[in-house]
Length: 201
Image (cartoon, rainbow, N blue to C red):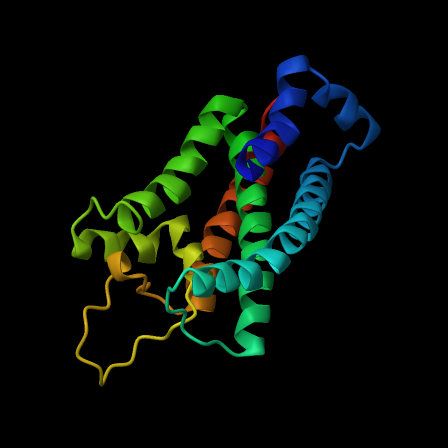
């Protein structure tokens, strides 16, 4: 949903021709893109915090109530999960905004961002369709690496176990995976700003 909102945040203006009015009111196109990124990112972050904060403790309680074992986690890890999930959603929305600016087409931008994040994640982790090596590689180099922020059990090198995405582990540490998503978003924003300055409205 946040990918759709992020892409539509600018493509709707392109489609209706309202972007000309926006640029007439604020000629600095880079600043317009930065303002849009700040708005969509901050609103999504706050909504993500509101959504994630009750889900993690309630979800763990429900799992325990149904006889499932839930690994214990510290309060700091729980805070990192809540803030990390909110940040994951916010940066994904900004990535979709940048893709919408680059492609100027909502369906294309949504498809591209969903393919690089959600589809890669689902084929690598819950559905486990991809071989472990391919899933491991994709979760290192695509924006789907950002989902590593959800990992709360570390992989220890001294433990002889299958640490694969199919078993709930990610090839990158939580903040490193999130950093890959941020890098993709920064590059997309840079390209979007460059194209926005060169193209006609």
